[in-house]
Length: 53
Image 1 (cartoon, one colour):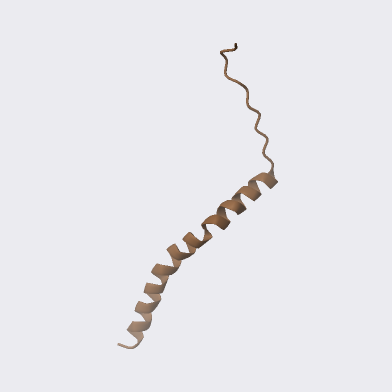
Image 2: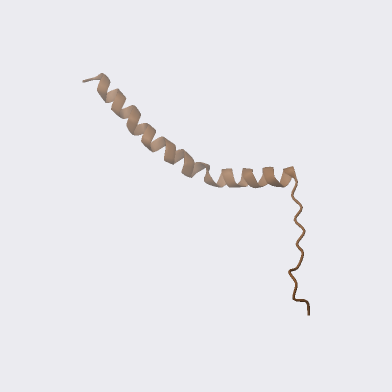
């Protein structure tokens, strides 16, 4: 029974990183879109309302 820390070999290449980033972005793009779109909609509505005052 060994008491040392086991060695772990991690091998990542560019394709793995690109796939992971793509998967992460595709799962969070809707949250990001709403986080940007809602304040932007209020800003645009305020500017349009200002045109008629």
